[in-house]
Image: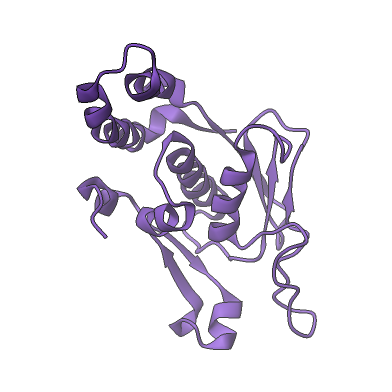
Length: 194
């Protein structure tokens, strides 16, 4: 698969997953998730996918400090309801990273490793997402503000707008991914931990 080179420069999210260790999927249960992994899961790279990845990366760093986040032991609450815009895309990204699901995920083995009942929509929060550790009940809220550095709608118009030309349509994929790179390059401006 050919993809933009900057994907390789995006910091990975590394977690501890006891289920993975138990089942022998990874030595010591260490899960290393790259942005490319998430792009493959989502099928595309955009402001929402990159922003959700950054919210998980920065949020989990704030929540766990120097400890590895414990996949499957994190509650995830989104402010938006499932039917609001592309909330489902964000939820899928967050689910793939944290293991948290509604009632569709893994139900566990002998009372351990349950992933269900950890992902919620329509939370009463001011941020976009709240992550809560199940072991300590400590939580962090994370907001994503891409408009501080990019305007996805303007770029989209270069391909779909009434003034779109064959040349602008041809240039669109490159411009779109340059926008995503700008988001990653300005992570500290677009992500706010509360």
